Length: 500
Image 1 (cartoon, rainbow, N blue to C red):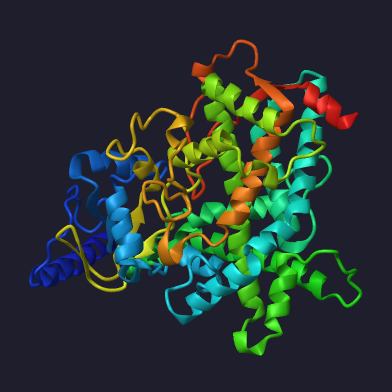
Image 2 (image 1 turned 180 degrees about the vertical axis):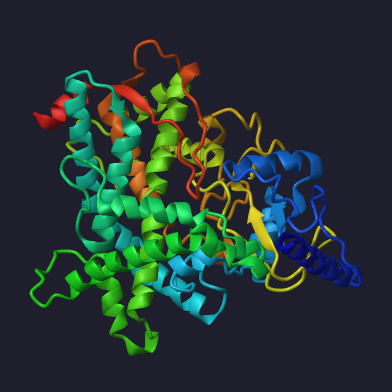
């Protein structure tokens, strides 16, 4: 009996909402038909949403709509439509939805990425651009990047000396997290043996919660089910653990007897900004900024290096070409820095081609409409979730010749870049919501990649062919390769010169 009453209540709410909408003139984008109450949730592939949306686009076009419970969803996946959403009508589409997991993890939207559009969002973005991720600040972190890359190269050298197969995915993940920890709070949260640390487990759990389904988000009347399923308790525990972690870091920086480092880390900068009372920053603001730096910064650069190495192993001609360019331009240097890479045209083309074909964030962080809008003659209501599918845009045959093939040559002599002005290539977004940490992430990615290609020749383990290398992704905000990339490394004469 209780189940019947529950079901009747659901249908009543649904039909009342539907009848109310029928009285309003509304011409939405096309899309697949859904079921009463749940909409299209039963059809949604949460493991590979970018691929699921791309396939729907082949049926319904580059703009289409769905319904996830009570939420209206619109997906755009062409350069023209991305420009409309992220630039032409940016003011209409620059909101962020209030989702349970995101709100809790971000201290109610106090971070950079998920803050609701408004005065606070403008303030925190300005702080990020001017104080945290400026060109000068990114350059100040160069010694950290170079030291962490050198540690990784030494590990690979040792493994190659004993002809061991190298799990490049694990090594790069370790590098990226050590790098971001030192940049953010001045110390490496990784033990000498490379086993999982407290930091690693917290990051993995937070990433999982970012992409977890909370019933409250799509069925507000039944949010109490999140408590029954244990989702809410899991979220509360993770947030408490993270908060304790942030407290430990901040208290360490506030310790009166703390030794002064030769360079400021991000916590130092934020605590200094807190002293400026006009900014009205609190410890919760500092914690929220640390959260997004960890989530966005710890994994994206390592994921991009792995995707690049994967594509180069599958395309030996491109591998040889980029290694020849690097080794000819940077002859007999003890170490490489980012300034060495500025004029390397083919290397930069390889980077752009990887961003096009395998962007670390295939779906840009979800937008929410602030007011009713019209695109291509279709109506989009306020509070609609809007996904920009960067992965599909990078593979659009209307923008790219042979879009499924890895061809860095397409960028030679091309002015197209990934900094938000060319909507065929938007791995970091564009407009008001472009990723402010882009320069920091790209610097780490390029330096790690250049060193791997410069000092070592890479081979597949015995019995494997390039056709055997898979490109299956793991689910998550950041698109990681599902199976680790395991290779053999051979030290070159360049490496031997470096250590002599």
